[in-house]
Figure 1 (tube, rainbow, N blue to C red):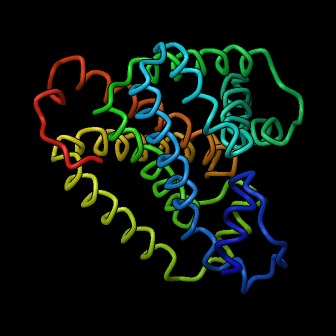
Figure 2 (figure 1 turned 180 degrees about the vertical axis):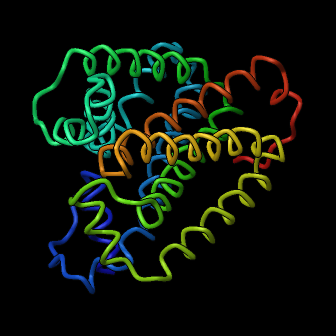
Amino acid sequence: MSSFIIAFSMYSKIPMPKVEWTKKNMRYALCFFPFVGVLIGSIEYLFAVCLLYLKVPQLVIGAVLTLIPILITGGIHIDGFLDTIDAISSYKSKEEKLKILDDPHVGSFAVIYGCLYLILFFTFTSALSRRTAGFMAYVFIISRILSGISVVSFPKAKEGLVKTFSDNADRNVFKSLIVELIAAIIASVYFLGPVFLIPTAVAVFCFYLYFVISKRTFGGTSGDQAGAFVCITELVMLVVLFVLDFSGVIQNLKLNLI
């Protein structure tokens, strides 16, 4: 229970009881990180279905669905995205890029790409139908499972919370996250059909690029990069879902949705 509380305290703004962040309490925290995605995905789906049923304008739906993840997480992953963009855009040495990640100031490139990210996220959530809303619920789960796997398996670029979580994680955390990934894929295929394997495969490809870029650019991963990966993967998966829906692939499916 303490690991669950720590995971939600760290990766969401949901009020949680206070617990001591000891090595024992933190060892399974990453196993519960994807549960934050379950919460976000469930709320996104319910809001999307209700708003679509009420025939609320698509622009309003897009705005609501863009705000929900930010309000629940407190923008922690977007913060990592902005810091990572600043560091990569600096074209400086690895050491200087790592210093930029810790710099509390926001650079111009972070602002530019942050605005572009929100515009794109808003655009593709505005284009959701009831069918793609069901697909979207899993996007927030898959991205966090893969991010959690990166925290416990990728080399670390520097000291920080990611290294702390990784060092204190139980050896079975990696196996647990793999089981969660398999379970999420099986559930998505059952409820949404094999077509959801396409955005999942794209997410895995993003995971591979994340490994290559983080190791080459920073010498390893960090909390900011893990957050950036969550943001980018969710956006890319939404784009893929839009393409599948626009091309008519999803429209012809019989889904086991509520």
